[in-house]
Image (cartoon, rainbow, N blue to C red; front, side, top):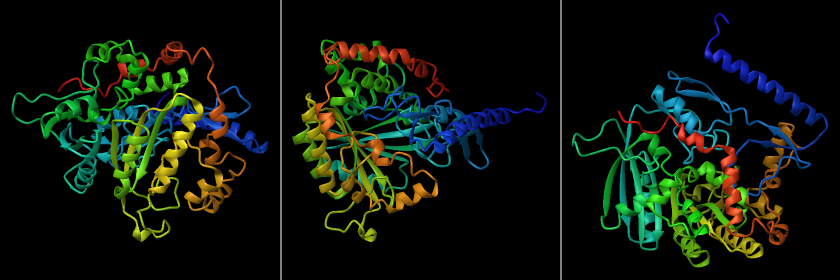
Length: 458
């Protein structure tokens, strides 16, 4: 077609898809039928609502394209189902990178809205590993490093009560002139998993430094899914957890494949995957609780800016203050990632999750919505400042007939406590092999094999 540009073609395809979806949504609205969005994949651990049930679905899985990248305005026009790795692959050739890139390649732009793109002509991240010898020291170091303007990235890992690592990153354009400095990568099958690399680097040294290619740094936790991949070796206990087996099984040990397997096997029903936003002041007490009650290590530490309510983003309350007094609140909070095996029995698993929710609330924290959530309606809405502001939004956008946020994320404690998996899936290792088979069916392993963001040298 004469005069047609790639952007024109992309926008035409986008408009065609929107016309189809609009027609379907208009029909559902006319009939006052509630519906849910089907994305095609998930980074949530909540029990999924299956297609094929009486629930109506609007399938937006095809809205997964980067339509354009504008170097002058530093913006990217993308559809909501664009995953992080596809977005980064599209922006890096323009010298741009989103200011916030979620840690897993499969998290979508719609699932974790990041805003406009930031300039990055830099090729590497100077990555420094700094050991902490106590929980309190690690928390203090994270806060201090966050306040240093020269740091572009800060997070931390607690391996135990006496071994933590605070990781800082600074964007740089070149490697040091010393010829023995080589880029450290984490995307190849023989590369170390990032968390194991951090642990090894700080076993005998107080500090260590690497130079990591930018995209490799952004998705450094993909292989092994932080450390959740180690749980697969605990499940298949006869498979040794070695560098050789991690190399051999690499296709199955990326986050997209692990999420498929986790849901397919049914093991998500007994795996604790919770991200908790805590005030810095009560973070140590919360970690003491998780250690004694759940025994889960490592833990992830990620400093975040606090947004004032009304919002569904977690917003913390400092001890001894009124939640409504925003001037008394800190502008920062600490996300603590708690990921590991919970109790085997459904009733015990639910009880532990409710106990964790109560402890989080007691210490002024809040959970992220992607995980199992058991709050009753009254308590839930009270935590978020009532539902008047939310109902006003629903009315404004004519969404009153749709499920509420609470409807979407709530897990019924009674039903979950009584729910039993199919006896065959509950039998090791059959459930695990079924989960692997489901992940293979998805062919998500091909996405990493073909990824263009992986470091290929200068």
